[in-house]
Length: 96
Image (tube, rainbow, N blue to C red; front, side, top):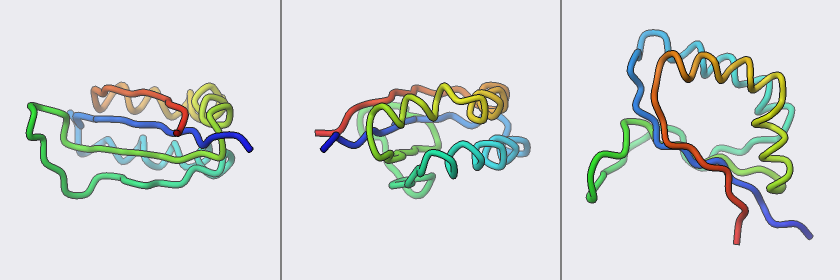
């Protein structure tokens, strides 16, 4: 049985008016690859310094699926919006 894969992002939304374009655009990729949101926005605190104003953890069936989703044409089209309307620290990791 393979380990789960996760996307972890600490995002600073710089254009809140247009950021929803990214959210709408990423739906196709997330639906296709079975993404499960563990966190998506919501309350947070940053006791060790700035970490952005939006925090997201997404679970995938496996690390390979998490990578495939990121590199998919569907997500690459959405990524353009994320980069226009926010800055982020982003990682794809394999679960324990």
